[in-house]
Length: 124
Image 1: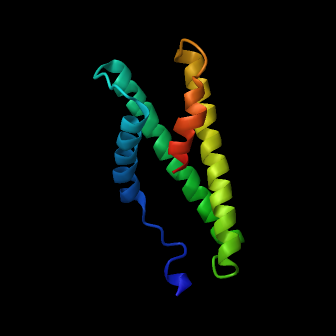
Image 2: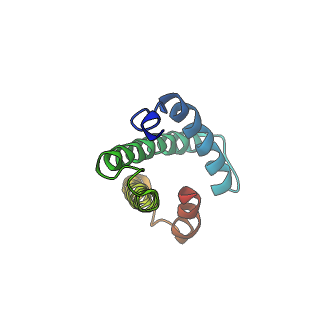
């Protein structure tokens, strides 16, 4: 049964559809007032590109764990490691890329809300 699913991840089309939808929902949860100007389009494009990179990171971690720690060996241990490592790497990427983009284009430090509210939304 397990061999039917392992190594057969056909999620490319799903990624292309879901990442922009998830980013749109995230955008509406994050910003109370959305301005329809260059800032909105730019941040949406950057966030969507980051979403694609995060999906790729999750895929690579899953592929790595498929080889090193198959589901049928220990499902609980595998899920724990997968959730832990994908969370650490993806949240780390989001924090690092946001800080770098803000350092180049922002007009000050990131608000505390990013670390207390936005990262919780990204985690979900």
